[in-house]
Amino acid sequence: LKFVIREGMNTTTGDIYDIAISNSNGIIDLKELEPGNYTGIIENDDYVKTIFNFVVVGGKNKTYEVHVSPHLDDSEIRIILSWNENPKDLDSHLVSDSLHIYYMNRVEDGVQLDKDDRNGYGPETITLNTTQVSDDIYSYYVQRYADVGTIAESGAVVRVYKGDTLLKTYYADQTSSTSIWYVFKL
Image (cartoon, rainbow, N blue to C red):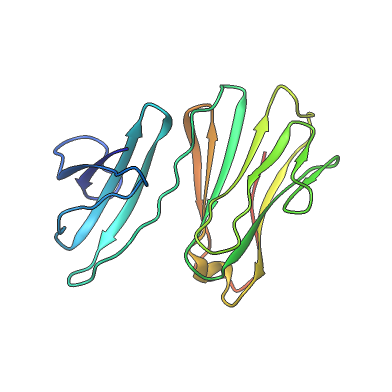
């Protein structure tokens, strides 16, 4: 994977601060970055271009785990949930009048829970094939399933892709103490 870094948040054009290539395990070693805000862009022929922001604080090394999505057909929607180490287990739920996709019911009517993570960080992914699903309204929510901590403390992020386009990124409310986060309707 090619990893491009630019200074500033949401900076997708202009001067490049650094470029790195991942090893076979997807791990990228970067030179020491000055404290500040950065935008990372991951590109590869096999994956959807992924853009994310990160902060470097002086004197501290930080490991970031970023999840990429394989290319999708234009008729597919993928929902990717990622989070920090705690709580260890957040669960994705997609619900309509006719289905409920989650860890106990992984495949139904053109919708599939592709990955269920129970060890922190995620990702959990759900893929919908829009040519096979009903015209129902789908609600997506995240549940803190196990371990200590709250969704607010988890740093949870949900990214929604249609085809190879990132439609929307949602960030968990950092002030909420609930164990369920209603994210969006589709």
